[in-house]
Image (cartoon, rainbow, N blue to C red; front, side):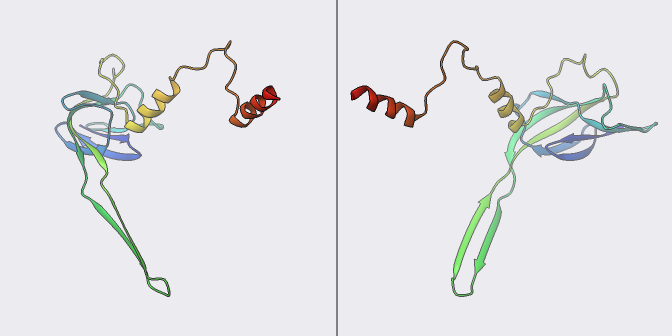
Amino acid sequence: MFAVLKTGGKQYKVQAGDVLRVEKLDAVAGAKVQFNEILMLGGETLTIGAPMIAGAAVQAEVIEQIKADKVIHFVKRRRKHSSQRTKGHRQQLTLLRVTDILAAGAEKSGVAAAVGTAAARVAAHNNAPAPKADEAPAKPKRAAKKAVAEAQE
């Protein structure tokens, strides 16, 4: 049985036992995660989602957090202004081993959903404590300086 899952803006075709390198997930090594965005299930019968398959999931175990090979970006302009610029980047990845593919019952499995680090930051930002209703909003600096100047006169 195979499944096509979506994570980190990419799609992966996986089977049980496969090792994947996906965009960094908010999980530690040894943790078990579950991907709920399943686009297609295959095997004896082919199931295609519209756009996702409800109740289907892929469970995986986090092996470790790794970095990809360094990518060097070099720009050189020659005419009249000889300038050079070198930039490097190492993408952070999560190494996973697919353990199980569930065609149904993903809600009852009890395994935490796989969440990317960007999604985790957004969720943490959205759950930030809101200012209390009885508190006045902070005055802008300019208005505060003007109020102090008027009070001194």
